[in-house]
Image (cartoon, rainbow, N blue to C red; front, side, top):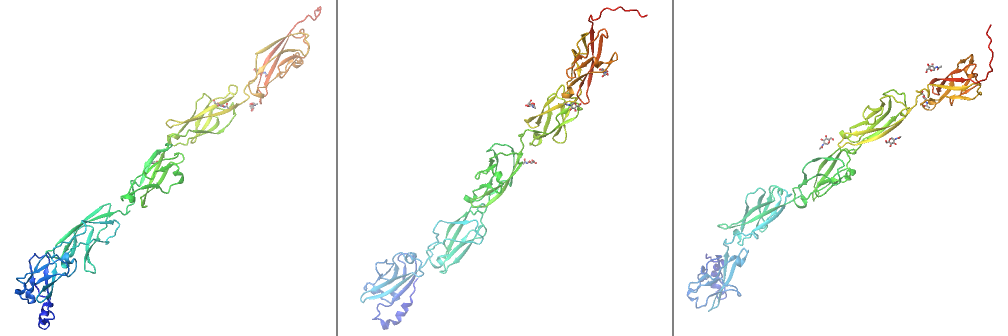
Length: 565
Ligand SMILES: *[C@@H]1O[C@H](CO)[C@@H](O)[C@H](O)[C@H]1NC(C)=O
Ligand SMILES: *[C@@H]1O[C@H](CO)[C@@H](O)[C@H](O)[C@H]1NC(C)=O
Ligand SMILES: *[C@@H]1O[C@H](CO)[C@@H](O)[C@H](O)[C@H]1NC(C)=O
Ligand SMILES: *[C@@H]1O[C@H](CO)[C@@H](O)[C@H](O)[C@H]1NC(C)=O
């Protein structure tokens, strides 16, 4: 690869004129590829400078370099050729410089003569593109939009020009396309462009192979793996396992009973996927009855749940992830009845006292029963267990009539203390009782009754007027005036005179007195009817016969009875 430089030609033209003054002039330049073997000929410098080969030794021709730097070439004193003395590595010598020139001098003595020798070192494609790391790690959020660009670290190729990196490529893939650009310095760099949106929940990472190729002949290439980690964006709200949780709950369930566990999952990771629970818009009083564990989603009982107060509860539950995305579900709690209410007996009306002559079937009271429970637990049966002449007759809904079943007799039973029992059909059943007390009112249905069927009394004649002869007594079991007995003599004639002129009776006591002195000789017996009457209205009465026998006394001197003539 010899090439005579321009300066060689020029110096030859002026040689004759400037020879003496310019013995040092006459420069030569060569162009060689790097990495030639030691001893390779760069060019015939003697010939190129028009030197006499045979005198080179004598003139002590040599290649000098400035300072202590390495000598890369030598002159062959026999042939005048410039040869490679040491390894010429362009990359080591010049790095990325576009031109790489080794500057040396050819020095001769007798007379002293100096020539500049420039060796242009040409690049050879002896380096491949190299990426700084084995793997390019990219973290891309799944929320990144299609079309977003991600700059890649470039590959380095120590070679220059065409031998440096000329193009990049990636294997075909679903998500990215490659874009190769040049900067203002003409250097190539690559970007990947998002061609399809990422979804971490579908694919957490994407691995691509990026190749960089230089323009040498043959080209050399280098590769690197691009490892894309898809970062979670909070693009998923929590999702409840059910939109509505329907549960049934017996009323009066104890505190801490678990009602239901709600559960929502969030496909995101870390904080974005951390779900907590809370009540949504829920009536304040419900919050006193139910508690919600914000971490576990367990809904449990906190206060008394009473079917009779509320049969259905709807709780709105919010699931929230760490970044505040939410979703909702409803919990519908159906409270089921338990038999926790005993029947209540209410006496709506009571006609006390009841007249004793009330006919069987007379309504004496109205009873109402209530049971707050539902269905069978609230079905009530109402009855009287005692043996009394009353019964309960079911009337309209939950009302009963208390009616008599037979004759009442105040004189036998004057009052009743009836126990009404109400029992529901729960299991076990609950029952309650109520006492109904009422009295029987008197009716004047008894006449006075004398203790004896008839009375007999004996009186000696010539008795003192006003003396008591005997007494009668009648009783009447009726109440007060209906049972108050008043005695009297029934008027009659005795020998043409009123009986009252012979006898009298104390109306209250029944003691009978003689009104006058009796005369056995006038009559021996007095018969009188005594009436016992009560004060009822109308009054009732009965009578009895009182026979008063008058006994003789020797109160007459004998008399001669003359025959009637
Ligand atoms: C809730 O109760 C109603 C009637 O009270 C009933 O029709 C329904 O089936 C119940 N639902 C559940 C989930 O028990
Ligand atoms: C009725 O009887 C009950 C129990 O047998 C008793 O407690 C109550 O005092 C009685 N009522 C009357 C007015 O006597
Ligand atoms: C006596 O009986 C009558 C009905 O014959 C009745 O109206 C009256 O209230 C009764 N008197 C008393 C004090 O019970
Ligand atoms: C006396 O009683 C009898 C029978 O009880 C009755 O038949 C009679 O009428 C009564 N006499 C009078 C005056 O009340």
